[in-house]
Image 1 (tube, one colour):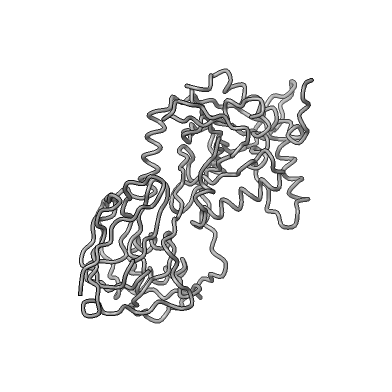
Image 2 (image 1 turned 30 degrees about the horizontal axis):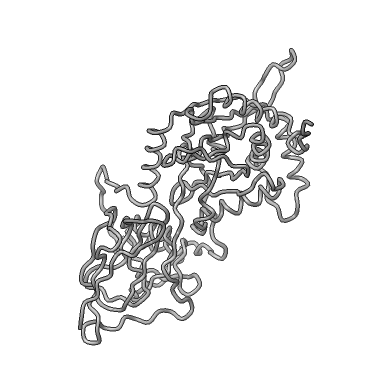
Length: 430
């Protein structure tokens, strides 16, 4: 019988510490090698850490929200044939993966959450009305569940060890948590809760808060709002949706705006820039890597449409849809969440009249789409009903002058009001 001290691993890319997000074991528990023991978060990614050995937990370091330095003791095991009873074998149907980073967003502050339902994973069927599952029994070994479902279980006070998973290899799906949350009162008696509750700011929400504060504190924002007549754009969008490819989803304004933006940035390269504060250098990009602010169950993420200037409309639309789905399901890779050179945020039906989006540092510009509505306007001396949408933008005033910012938005407005121009090659002067 001996003790094994497991230290906070080096998670790469200059990481010096990691924040404890959630423990999945406690002192006294018997764990198997490769069983998930803790979720941690660095400034780059969320990481699930498995047990390096089989044994009994003697002690753990830190509680959710605490930071533990790389190389410092994280958890102490009692190991050995006499000191540690063998844990239950892991399911052979779905062997546990090694510690795998779940990317954290490079949060784009300033976008508001959209009121959209989270898509249900394929194959998850809701239980029949009134049907109750047999009482589950606690199990040992690794509990298979996504980080999002682990969070839901914590918030609902559900012990995942008592939930029967219906997914592959016994993986716990979102619908498996619903019956557990509505079990008879005899199991979880209802009690009058306190009038207030405290929620510790940890993990991705802490990272978003820190970066929003840093961007707002360090960047002098220049905000500019312009009204755009999108009547012709709406007509084009509806026509394209009628004749769209069989495997394509319905077009929103977002792909069309991204296409127009790539054209505009040819004339305003100073807005397709990243500021390297450590070196005091502006890095101007020829390629346009557009960040798409996406609300997810775990917070705001910004997946990136790379080389948007080289893609066609349907390719842009498909890539936005693919990246949004991966971000919401927690499957987006780190490479899909970094490297944007300018960000677009759409508030959809919640768009309101105007907004003041916060720049997604180290970028220098962000474009926000507000709600499009029909209203009467005066056009060539006549009162007509037109579809109007505001563009709300913010620029880093240290590097983008107000005149240039306004001129860029005016150029974007012109393309959106005459959308055929988006697809006509620009004539180069001799």
